[in-house]
Length: 376
Ligand SMILES: Nc1ncnc2c1ncn2[C@@H]1O[C@H](COP(=O)(O)OP(=O)(O)OP(=O)(O)O)[C@@H](O)[C@H]1O
Image (cartoon, rainbow, N blue to C red; front, top):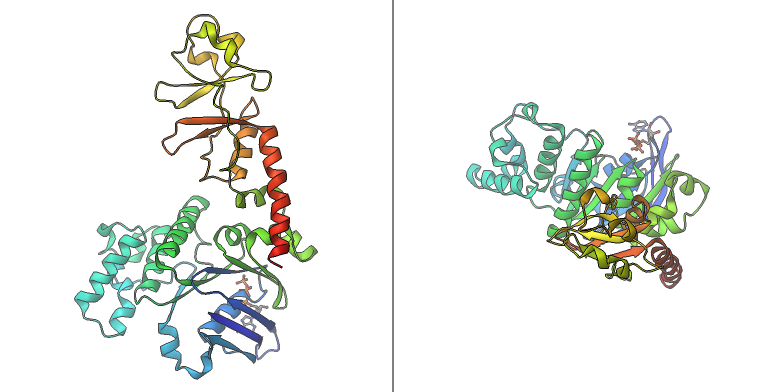
């Protein structure tokens, strides 16, 4: 665990970049520092590996003051990833990744075989090994940066806006990959970003900082969205706070109806009986059970069902995997107001109305408030 204990950084020109910051960064999880430009995020991160020395206060790693360790030993226990990856342009990808193991005295062969293993872990094709950084896309270069930081298997990973320079689609891929790697390797990751959505997606804990190097709030993302500490945090979280919070509630408990699901080869003359006042539409599936669209029983009664009689079913959700937000989104996108639930193979397993989703949201909010109280 990393403990930041009343740390202040005053640069020689008098700028106070970080002001009496205290917090504990839990082991084997992702802690995100987020805040507007110039609020002291990078300075905080760099104090953890002593690229910047605090003016006051202490930073403890597993209970020991980091000042007591030789800087090189400390940095070896901390991988460091920056925006634009910061790769060595004159070295191949494999040699970039092997840099730290080589510095540690590993043989060339062992360092390269470790590098090859890491390329696979971060999702880089082995065919890229012999290329130079300029021959890779921005997203690929970032993956190399992550692989390089992981090469010597440090327990801590410091990441400074690592995904800020890539487009939103690549960025989402990199974020998902980081979560997967974190799940597999259990590193202690300290991550700096100015993007609150990235912080909420990645963070186990999120430290919101404000200009002047002050800590505005330190909390798990769901708690930030529920209980912003003040107007600054609320404003920084931005719009749709309530909807975004639904991402933290599972959809597994939603009560699904199966009666309105019919296969396309069903006898259309008897479909009327399947619709109820409560569920006036029928979800028509193909012969494998995959949804095709909604139909009104009245419009489907003339012989067999034809696909052109159906309307879009929006975007389905997977109960247990997706959140209440996905279920609500599915119901909003569906012209009938009913969301379609599918299994991992995309087969319809049920449908659920907006009313039922609304009730689940109210219950989740009520329980969430109780949880927050129990948790202090
Ligand atoms: N070497 C330095 N000398 C003087 N002031 C500095 C120095 N480095 C940073 N600062 C100032 O300290 C404050 C915090 O900077 P820092 O880079 O930590 O912020 P940040 O939150 O990471 O910003 P950004 O998101 O823009 O990267 C800023 O006002 C910055 O101008």
